[in-house]
Length: 379
Image (cartoon, rainbow, N blue to C red; front, side, top):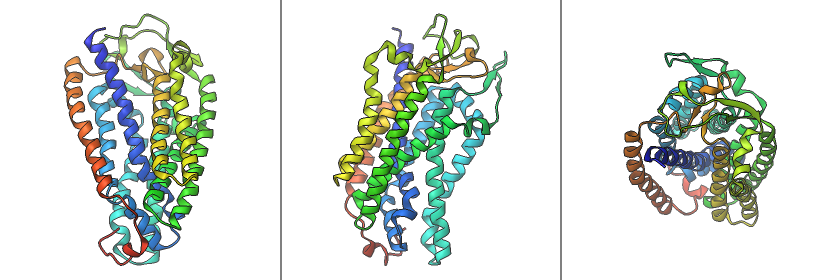
């Protein structure tokens, strides 16, 4: 196997790793924001909940930047096309995420009930919307996206954002993503909170994990009958990054199951997702939130890599012109580019993981309402 092909596969796996890191770390914060009004019945309890993720939320956004940066650097054609296809959704996502740091900084600057209540709603919206969009994007991509290229390589969009944002499968994927975030966020609140926050977060975390498991099962059955994409002609993995001269692609019902039929060992990935979800629910029920948190991370690994494995080597199929679908083989950067980016990733990704782990270690322990309320410097 040629080096260029190996690099393409490595970057496909690394993209999955970075998207998983985004889901686990950013999703945890989003889950706390979504749950804020429900786990905190008083202003002091809500401030305590915010300060449980206060030292980490902005650092966790690094995973969001890494995910986007990886797509930009390793799969530039995918980056350019997807950010254009999902332009309106991206604006919605960015607007909701921009409001989130504003809410952190401004919420406790004034003591008015309406003032703080308004920012609490902002936390809910800016926590739930990004996770719904995140999951819906995976659903949209699995269904195929309406776009094509002219002979000059110019991109054309063939459907409105409402048609892919509000279809049933995408909505289900969005709710699955939000459920996992609620489970992870609730677990985080258990790790750092005390009663009554602990008990309310425990119920939310258990419920979120169970709902996610049910939706994951429903999604699996749905995907088995969903129209997928498959090559019907010879494929050259060493092809240049040009979607205009790729192999022939056919739309086939159940095609996303082909990789699992060919390599049964891959079934371990969806099993891993179920083990993480149900294990997280059981560990939270047993009041072991640290173990439950890691179960939540395993659940995200199972879900994201299940999707990636189902679609491989497709990255974003075209429902308008399947032969122009973007794949790992025709949407990647050059061999020179992928080599250097791999070097940087191998150096800096462990640094980010080590630094994040150190921050969580230093900021460990319970956050008490009594210690937060009189502190004007806390959130």
